[in-house]
Image 1 (tube, rainbow, N blue to C red):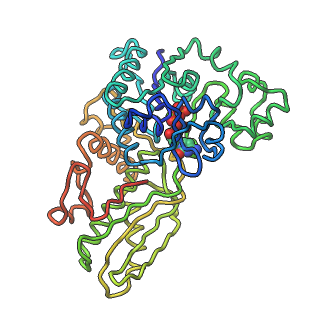
Image 2 (cartoon, rainbow, N blue to C red; image 1 turned 90 degrees about the vertical axis):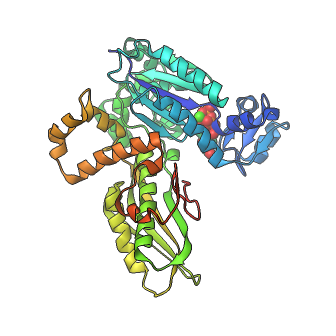
Length: 419
Ligand code: DCP
Ligand code: CA
């Protein structure tokens, strides 16, 4: 069986974008951040700079350092362009900030030499954005990511199934996703320094040593994949809010905007592979009074209708005055990885069959929740390809004719499409 997942990671993401935008920074030590280093160019890393380091210390280490304050929306444009290129080569792409996983399962015939496809993607990314990416290919997501880590920056590495064991066995334990400095130290005390040596520990001893994560690491040190999401990729909350074009009491407009904001938030949650344990709603009356409430859901979700009906309940409780509304917002909080839902599922369900066969699939007869997941995965895909405005559903329909649209969706008075 061939290796079937491609992982890509943008090299020195924020710093490289700044260098691409300003030729005078090219080849120079650059750090992006305020207070601390968020991203350091590889030229700056030679001086020992790394993410999280206070800028004061960074300046001491590297007096010629150019420091740039971040431009998050611009970085997002670059990463989206790169992810769009990846999407041309894979039916399913999962993205996290500056990383993407392309699922090439079942595409052996189309891509007999996956390395060649990865090279083409790397070349195109460089030509079209000026950024370099590092790519790894492996049998699963974890191995693909571990492969790319070994050849940063601007590298490509493929780990064939036959090479897996040799590849993973001699790496230090810290290279295994989920092993941080604390765990590495703990294992070091037991004289366990490589991933291969970790396999000497039984499932029980790993659990006794590390608790539940020990069980996950038991699988990982054997090259078995589990969902890999690092805490930094999980935002504290996903908020979407906007002012109305005019202060309003019109319930159709308010419901429509609330639904639309919910959709935008849940779409982001799904893109990040997250679900929310809490939902919040915020309103601003036109006389300046603000109200906000956040409540816990009984079951975490990232489905539009579930979040919307909950948010609507909160809204009705909050909106008690006979005063027009100026602004409204929805927030997803208490975010956790959603292991049960991946866009990949939809492709597995579809396989090589046609859309009509999906309907005949017994899975589709399952609960409506599962149907909504499937439907949303399709809608997310269509929107990714043809723009957000290509599908308008639910109460957002109330906004048709009321708000203008472009490819990215309805034109809100206050853009709120940040994380
Ligand atoms: N980031 C941040 N704060 C951190 C770590 C990262 O703001 N503590 C941001 C800035 C990075 C981006 O996330 O550019 C991607 O993080 P990476 O860890 O992938 O770092 P880079 O892309 O900068 O470097 P590289 O991937 O080449 O190691
Ligand atoms: Ca990166």
